[in-house]
Image 1 (cartoon, rainbow, N blue to C red):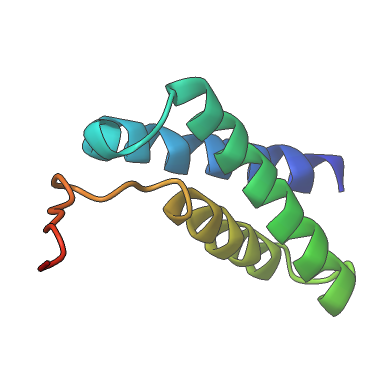
Image 2 (cartoon, helix red, strand yellow; image 1 turned 180 degrees about the vertical axis):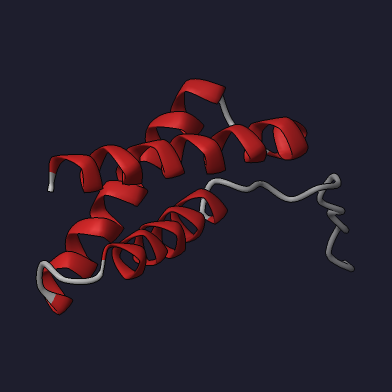
Length: 89
């Protein structure tokens, strides 16, 4: 189980690194992105491991990928500036 948790943390770190590299202009500080990626992956692994039991490690890692990706997607900001129109009088 320790190796499973370490694998999940590495998966979260890798996903966060890819997100920082490709979407750095739309994300907050890189430290927050890396922490969110790792925490999401560990939580996803925990939930999958709890639901399915101690059997399939690849499925637990898939759960880690899904939850980490979802967590990182919550950090994204809009790409362009928001256009604000004044209300007609």
